[in-house]
Image 1 (cartoon, rainbow, N blue to C red):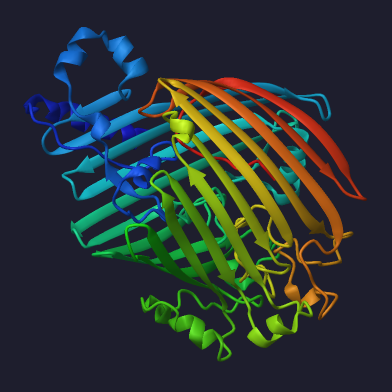
Image 2 (tube, rainbow, N blue to C red):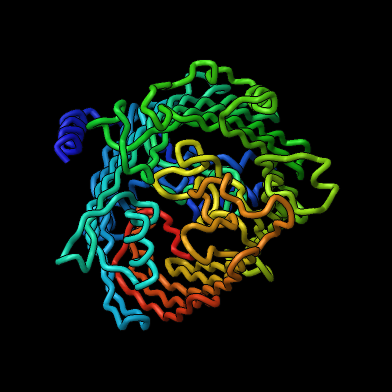
Amino acid sequence: MKNLIMVAVFALLTSAAVAQEKLPVIVPYNYLDIRELYLDTSNHHTAMRPKLHTDTSAMYTEPYTTKRSWVHRKLFDEHLLEFRNEDYNVFIDFLPDFQIGKSKDGSRTNWLNTRGASIQANIGTKFYFESYFYENQGKFPLYLDQYIRKQDIVPGQGGIKSYSGGKAFDFNMASALLSYTPIKYLTIDMGYGQNFIGDGYRSLILSDIQFSYPYLKLTANLGKVQYTSMWAQFMDKHSKNFATAYDDLGYYKKWGVFHFLDWNVSKRLTIGLFDAVIWPDADSSGRKRGFDWSYMNPIIFLRSAEFSEGSSDNALVGLNAKFKLLPKTTVYGQLVLDEFKLKEVFKGKGWWANKQAWQLGVKSFDLFNVKKLDIQAEYNAVRPYTYSYKSTLINYEHYNQSLAHPLGANFQEVLGIATYRYKRWYGRGQLLYSRYGDDPNPATNYGHDISKPYTTHPNEYGNYIGQGVKTNLYYAQGTIAYIFNPKYNLRVETSLAYRKLSNSLNKSDDLIFNIGLRASFRQFYYDF
């Protein structure tokens, strides 16, 4: 907060020389406005996010501002603090998330008390900066409460401390991004946050469901081709006994390198190729390895080829594709190969190490010619043991959450989402059904929990999606919101969610109601 105040004071002191002409505002796309890229007649690179753009809604309109009071403008149309001139833009906001609700399972009163702050700035059109911080206390529905206590994290929001005599949790979250575009062909990002690769609601390649992590990302744009290399550091929170190298240094670390080549083949078709390698910062004995500088090589699939020759690191390859079927309808999909032997696939005997995942979806905008009525349908499937490895020091996971899908592996899922916006009203409905195979006890591993070592698989052959304790998950949620201020998504929101989980070991049935005053464009994934 001290740094935010210093920036605000500096901007106030320099605002005396404000010129009439304003610098364009540069901001990342959010989940509400990225639809614009799919509706454009041009074929854009949409898979890699966050993605910056020029916010045309932020054009300076002097006649409008003089007709409204300061209170009205700040509540409905502007950031809390705005400093704009021909050289830079600075925006500072207070981000509340105050919710209260009730859930049937356990007859619980749920609540959330979040105080957040943000600063966004662009200097010229080449440099963008943002920083967010949230301090939270909350009490969650029973299924989330059980998950939080088991994993020692709030999904997507980091570690916890006990609050209110152990009945609730205290947690905080921060993120930041520095983005620099020295030339139009190259963008350099340094961040502490999440990334997303894909066109769906889920991503089986790299998702944004987990806690923040540090990363460096280079993106080159060469005509119809966009190429991204990213290096990131993750944390293994499962390891409780720290080795010598990690005394007083917190959790074990691990590293990841990601390459994504996105090619707009035509005005309708885009094909993206992906690879990733995860390697440990130190082994279980504490022997330090650190960052492997050989992974600075930006050539896609190079390290995956070395993996096939015996490398001990965890490598994945994948495909992302989209096709504009109609002007306002896009079909998309993903394919991920973890470990793969073609002859074993053709044998059809369910070899445990045939670890694959696939996605197929469609999104349609302005359905029935109703402006801003959008729908999305998606199917996801992940074979057993995908994303897992010999230990959590090297699996596809960060801070006790998958880097891909919140259900881990060994599941099939279908979901549908409909959204509608009318003026400042926003409505959203979601239906989800998933079937997965759970483990009957902690010692058994049928491939659902990616934190378990795949070396403990009980069967060499005969493995299939849904093996183990057959579990059915139903989730439905409806949300209605009135958006006071679209600049930082300040809104009054109410939602009703239904969740049912059933298998031979456990049954739960919950109805969850929430109402509150919320802000920011954060997305949390509690639909698991």
